[in-house]
Image (tube, protein in one colour):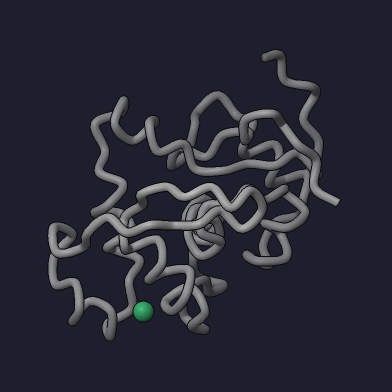
Length: 144
Ligand SMILES: [Zn+2]
């Protein structure tokens, strides 16, 4: 499917296959983002398990790692999750983690990371290097 010219309302998400294809472990990178409290529940990345996740819009049920829920429902809500000291690429990655990987636009990402600006974030995401598997979401739906 051809992708329309991306703008600051184009939605991006984390492509989990990108991690597999690039020899990186999404689960261990998510584990790194856990707060201390949750780390006591999941001492190592291998301690998490797949759980059912219901897509908020379509109601479709899929198996996801328990760490998604953990970050979306807990760690991602804590004030230290994204701070002014967090590098922009890490902040974008974490913003999507805490959103349960529901796609976000550069406008929305900017509100979450409070760094750079929406067009700067768009430029970064459309750069030659894909950072942390963040790519335009399929279908390229525009956010409202
Ligand atoms: Zn937590």
